[in-house]
Each structure stands twice: as C-alpha cells, then as structure tokens.
Amino acid sequence: MTTRNDAILVGGPQDETLVASGDAGLLEAELDGLIHRYIRTTATRDREGKTFTVYNYDGEVSPGGGESGSEDAAARVASPLAAGQATGLPTSGSTGS
Image (cartoon, rainbow, N blue to C red; front, side, top):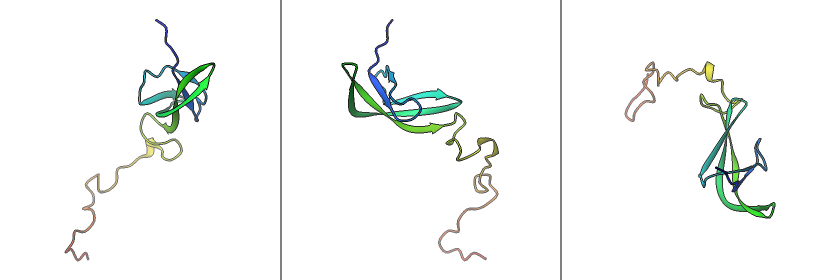
C-alpha cells in the first residue's frame, strides 16, 4: 500500500515536511519525548507541482501534560482546594474572619 503526501506542516520542528494527513483536523508527531501538534487550515501551498493542505504548528505538550519549560510534571502538587484542604472563596453573605 502506498501513502500519498497531501499536506505540508508549517512552523515548529517539522517545518516544510510533507505528510499524508488523511484529512485529519489535528496531526501529532512525537519528537524527543514531546508531542508536537499541527492544526489543519483552509490554506494551501503549491510544491513540486502539487497542491498541499497547510497544517500550522500549534505547540508542544509533554505526554504527562503541560508545555515544556512551563511546568515540571514530576513536581506538580494539587491545589489545596483540589486536595480538600481549603474551602474555596467565600460565598456572598460570608463575612470572613
């Protein structure tokens, strides 16, 4: 079975790479332990005498969640509210202390 490249990735680490998209709305590529996302657009580009659908770079995420450099997944701690250690913001009518 042969695959036919029908899309071009724009931006990110795979910039200008031709791929077979299968008309998916989102393409993901795992590189160096991160998942890089590309979103389908309505734009096209001509290359090698053919027209390709453009997929724009949408950023990267780690498989465990979060963007690289913005958070350390291993050091993540639940908020006190999520952990049941706080009651949240006062409701209207509360006077606080």
